[in-house]
Image 1: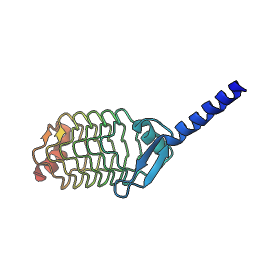
Image 2: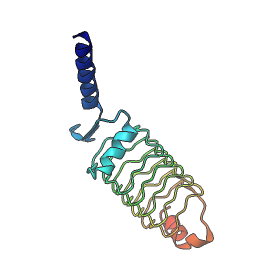
Image 3: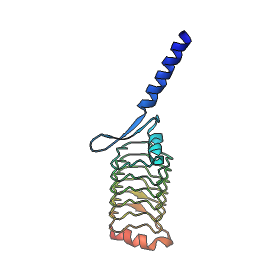
Amino acid sequence: MENFLEEVKKYVSEIETKEEGIAILNRYDEEVIFQSTKTTMKKAVEEAVEKYANLKNANLKNANLEYANLKNANLEYANLEYANLKNANLEYANLEYANLKNANLEYANLKYANLKNANLKNANLEYANLKNANLEYANLKNANLKNANLEYANLKNAKTTYCTVNFSSFEKEQAEQFIKGL
């Protein structure tokens, strides 16, 4: 009987742990956008993306998403301020109007990502792959784009004041758009 009781306690404990998990909240009203049984924010966000959850307005401020696979994620209007997205895969992600202020996107894959009107002020995009990314109207003030791949990126009307950047000879159009944003 004691063994049976211990097994029941263990089972109940496992259920409670699973039900707790991580909740991804709306940045404006703190309603739950996605409930995960995972124990880290990185795993919870990856699970949400795998299940095609809409993470529009998600509050991911200060989240550690290093090496996260967020390909095709909808993070429109999401708050990713101070998030660690180093080496993250954000290919084809929708980050329109996202707040990425002070985020670490070093070595991140942002190919074909939609960053239109995104706030990337003071963001670290060193060595990031922004090939074919849409950065139209994005705020890149004080952003570090050193050694970033901006080939075919749309920088039209982007705010580029005090940005650190170097362009390759293949990125003439991007350099011209960048200069217009100063």
